[in-house]
Length: 206
Image 1 (tube, rainbow, N blue to C red):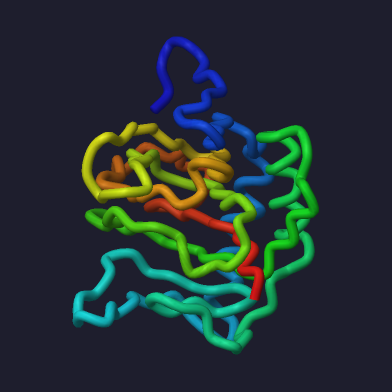
Image 2: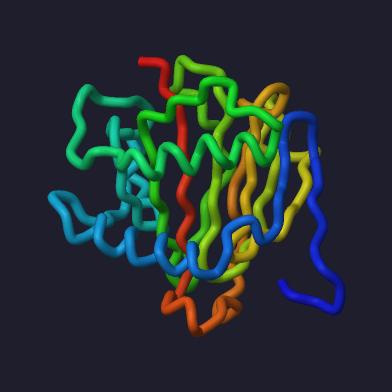
């Protein structure tokens, strides 16, 4: 959350890069509007039902190759916009100095209403080892970056605010991660968003 001092770029783990305020406010507003438009298309935001019967508290929508727990299906309901894929490449240039040929073919848009959270998990259904690009919009959250072996400690908590970029690749590509808490009402009201949106761009390699 905003304080007296500017938040600084950080590398909380090898291959993991946090760039606070990477998205200008105008671009944030554009992305919020785009996420609303995505939900008016052929698919809408929905709560994912897990194989064990549990229901995720976040509401999600897939662009490009569609993800289901815990696999990708050979189906595209909503095309991944080229401008969003290009934004992902720009993000990697910012984080690593090069996009390394990053060619995302899927994006998961998660909406966190009041009380929603994300348990510790790995993004491991992709064959590609390309980094995951994460963009935050709206309310500030606690992002928990863990380890590759277990869902528990050691882990590092990072606060992600609206406009923040977080990339994890290399040694951190398959670490467990989650969102244990969102701080309601922390977004700028001028953004026009109540809650938190998170866009993750991935290259499946499929």
